[in-house]
Image (cartoon, rainbow, N blue to C red):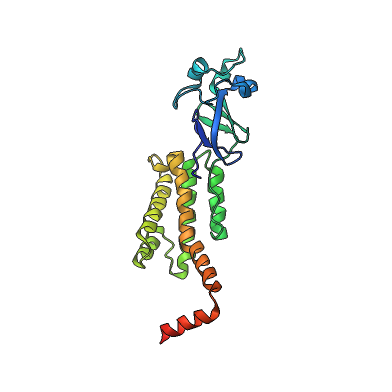
Length: 241
């Protein structure tokens, strides 16, 4: 299932508690005790981009009157699947500190998986930092793929794989990951990774690269071993003959 990044007042997104894309019920933070009694079954109390103060006036959910106006900048949503709560301050997710980053490919080399994990941990606070870490992960992945032939430079290593006849689509996604990670370490420059959904896409790209160079080979080897040895020998002999 496609992951949908959490955003304030978004009707449905991937819950950081249960990792399920589900409808979320929204309410003002001061009405959190009443959220399950929300008469608005749509679970949506405003349009994307609406402020919490707008939601106060337009929401049909019950509210508890409070004297402290500071709470007006806070909101809460409840997942209709697991009933877990997300807490927001203006447009920032405060709780839980989680994100719908997909799991790293199991066949990804361990050191690369470790960097991937670091990138997922900082994603909520800084998509740009995630992009920079994923660029490092790509560099390490290329070194694993090329071994002693790796130059240690992403641009050159991608070019080497292109010259070897690697599928153009894979070369393209490598370049996207390289470019976004590189731009993320240059101050004052705008890049795609500043957008949460675009930054999430970079995680998917890294997994696709691991799938191409590690998972696919492992699966093909497994399938080959399932072929009766006699038939494998016959095919090898025909090729040699």
